[in-house]
Length: 406
Ligand SMILES: [Zn+2]
Image (cartoon, rainbow, N blue to C red; front, side, top):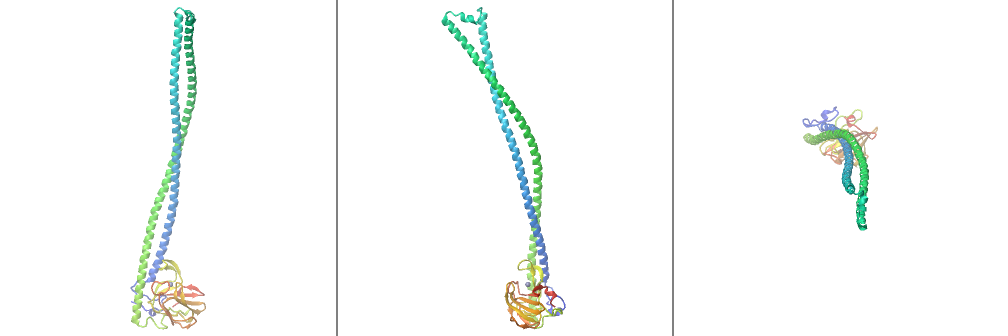
C-alpha cells in the first residue's frame, strides 16, 4: 500500500509503496553491477592483449625454429653435394686405374714379345738382331725385315708414352682425390658439429616455443572465462533493468491508485511536505518514488554510469509539480534532453530546476509562492516513463537535492 509523503515528514526521502520493489535500490544494484562489468571487461581486455603478445612471441619462436631447420637442411645439402662430387671423382679414378693397369699389362706383354723375339733370333745361333737384318736374302728382304722391326719398336714406344701419360694422370687424379677426401672429411666434421649446435638450439627453442604455446593456451582459457563472466554480468544487468522497469511501473500504479482514492491528485498548493529549515525548500511532489539518485550512477537510457545532476522522482503523468520554495521564474521552455523545463531562482545563489514536464503553468518573470503549482509531471525529453527530474543548484553547481530539501 502507498505510504503518503505527508505521513513521512522528517525522513530524508519520500514514500514508496510497501511490498513493491524499490526502484532506487535496484538502481543502486545496477551501479554496482555496472562497476563489476567494467572491471570484468577491463580484465578481459588486458588478458586479450597479453594473449596477442604471447601469440606473437610464439610465432617468432616458431619462425626461429624454422630458421634453424633451414640452416640444418642447407648444411646437410652441401655435405650431400660434396659427397656426390667425391663419389664421381672416385668412380673416374677407378676407371683411370683400370685403363692404366690394362695398358701397363699390354706394355709388359709387348715388351716381353719383343724381347722374346729378339732373344729367339739371338739364341737360334744368329749373333744378334742385326743378324736378322744382315741375314736378309737380298736388299728387298732387308728393307722388309727392317720395316717390321721398326714397327714393333715404334708401337712399343707409343704404348710406353701412353702408359707414362696415364701414370701421370692417375698420380694427379689421386692427389686431387686425396684433397677432395680431406675436404669431405673436414666438411663432414663441420656438419656434424653444426648439427650438434643446431640440435641443441632447436631443443632449447622448442622449450621456449612450447612455453609460449602453453601460456597462450592458459591466457585463452582465462579470456574465455572472463568473457563468460562479462556476459553473465551483462545478463544480470539486463535482468536488473527489467526489474527496475517493473518496479517503477508498479510504484507508479500504486501512486496513481492512492491519488485517485485521496481525490485531489496529490495535494494542493502547499501540500508538498516538510520544509528544510536551512534552505526553505520542500519536495515538489506530494508523493513520488525515487527512481534514480543524484551523483555518479547507472543511466538506464545510456546504459552506463553517468553523472546525474538531479534526482528522478517518478509520479503519474499529470501529477502537479509544486515550487520547492518561494522565488521567481527564471526560465520556461524546452531544453535538450530535459524536455519542458522550469527554473526557479530563490535568492542566495539557490535555484531549482524541474524537467520532463507535460505542462508548464507559469511564465518567465512570474513570482511564485512556495508550493505553488508550476507544471505537471510528464516524460518529455530523454525520459523512460513519467517522472520529474529535479535539480537543486548553488551558484549554478548541481547539489544533491536530498541535502537541501525536506
Ligand atoms: Zn534525471
